[in-house]
Image 1 (cartoon, rainbow, N blue to C red):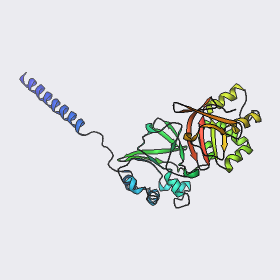
Image 2 (cartoon, rainbow, N blue to C red; image 1 turned 90 degrees about the vertical axis):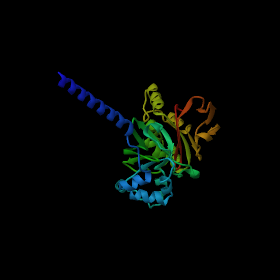
Image 3 (tube, rainbow, N blue to C red; image 1 turned 120 degrees about the horizontal axis):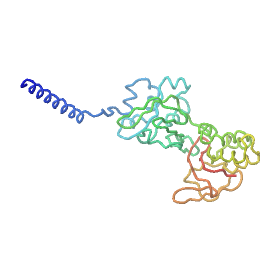
Length: 298
């Protein structure tokens, strides 16, 4: 009987020691944090020599080695080659700068279905370009391009990309935003209006997909079958020719290709023609800017 009691005491003592040590380990050894900054990680991981050389050429090395916070969309040497991108070409600086954002942005920090300003000043009057962002959980798409891995660095976030971002025209940017697909189709059907968008600088107010579909359903038609005059009115009333107006510049009465447009502001929010609100703004492109609005301007 005594031996059994002694055995129980030994077992209890061992259990206490084991539990105490385990609890102590939990307190002392939490998840390891990042140990390298952005530049150090890309240098040590290998396969990013082309982008690293371009980042250095355009003044990013010291910043990515420093104490600031950045988010970089890292494109490997192999991916750049697959995309046919030459980072020694004339537009190399803009391409590189499209892949760098201010701040350490984790997936939850990105605005869904919005345009996020990058560091590429390739728009009219050197306006910085907007990148269209889509977020589903941990998945983020940048101008329609996915990342394959994310890495947290001591001074920001790294997203290893499965494609290269490039500066885009208004027409190209319309094509990658699924929230304005019907508007894009309508524009492609009207060659005269489309030529104005592609041959000069324009501010475009693209109707959201939800509202455009509702309009088509209410009128029992499709984009291709709708009355051409109606389609042209929707497009003409949504385009300001010869301008590149960011959201902060929109005010008062503006002249479109069709009727005049009235912009009012209340509580920091804009309303167009008394009915349409801004759903996504400042989609800056190389030849103009896109704003997504909640209603048709017909």
